[in-house]
Image 1: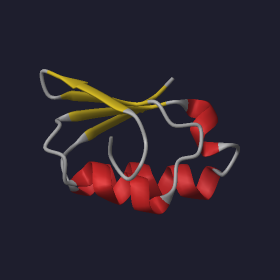
Image 2: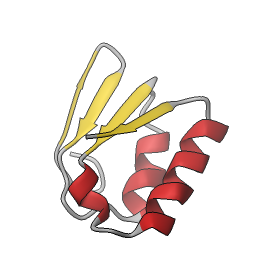
Image 3: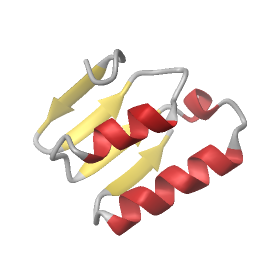
Length: 68
């Protein structure tokens, strides 16, 4: 659990199983030590600015962010 949300992590890859991704959650994931973080696309709920900000933050931290 990270920021109250279910996260599965293995081998440096973290999969966030939240359908309500918040800035707090993305910031918490930046400090988890994973080299790749995967979010559910539905978790952003059409909030394109939130998704873009998350992408930028992960890129700045040299962490790969993906959505599916």
